[in-house]
Image (cartoon, one colour):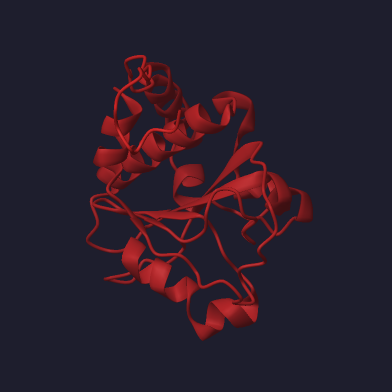
Length: 193
């Protein structure tokens, strides 16, 4: 799959936390890892859009929590650029080096579709940032000891199966082919000579 096709499938909505909010520190991030979380919210309607909205609200600002992407069975919401630090690992080192991906667990959601979308997003992020899937796709648990991503951790071979799927998808990603472009001398006022 070409990277542009993967983006189309992910259906990413950019809904950034406003600059200046206390939970958007504005520090530069050079991602070296991807941290996977579960939202820990099983309420009906607690989908990716709801979590993106939450990150712009008063409680998230007060608690100073933020992450980059929230994934459900239909959409992916991006709340921070991937070159900015988010506060999602409960660890200074984790926050300084990792892109945060929250996977929804709300009632009524197609769980299999949500995990497939999360695996594709993780594969795309690994592809674009040169992140090794097996060694640098981490659980929130790896940074802080928290039981997160709880759903994946509870399933037999859940985490291992997720990593295998990410690796499969990553292996299949390809750059968008682009023909070589060369400028030739043309009598066009838009070109500088």
